[in-house]
Amino acid sequence: MKNSFRILTLAASLCAGLAFTAVAAERAGDQAEHAHKHKGGPNGGRLLETEPHAEFFVEKDRSVTIRFFSDDLKPVAVGEQTVTVLADAKEGKIKVEFDKSGDALKSKSPLPAGDGYNLVVQVRAKSDAKPQNFRFKLDLATCNECKRPEYACICEH
Image (cartoon, rainbow, N blue to C red; front, top):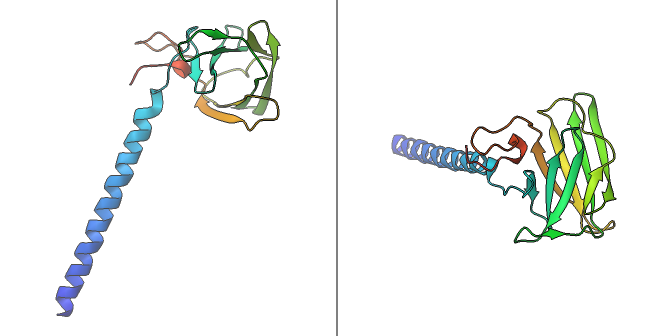
């Protein structure tokens, strides 16, 4: 009787462990699958899911331009939105702020040198609103498939 109970307990433990492993693997697969499941902006940047949509684009001089678009990707004038970028580069965390410039927000300073570091883009609908945070790695290499910078890649690889 004791042996039967031990065998049943062991079997139940193994089944629970296998179920937990399967769920964890499925979640990890979902996260990897979502790595490039975002829309690309009309100017070749990364489109952030804000209202209106904000396109994050790194210029050749490493400055950042943020433009806003409606759901059908028509340009929207900059209103009361504010944006801040936090770059976690080798030099430490660097805050990049933006000024309104025509129909866009332009960074006051360029991003730090190099790439491969993490960015946090904080978008506020109004200066006193709660920020929406978008985290991604700055990778300026060009994707071979979609020809966009990797930070804005729309491929599913």
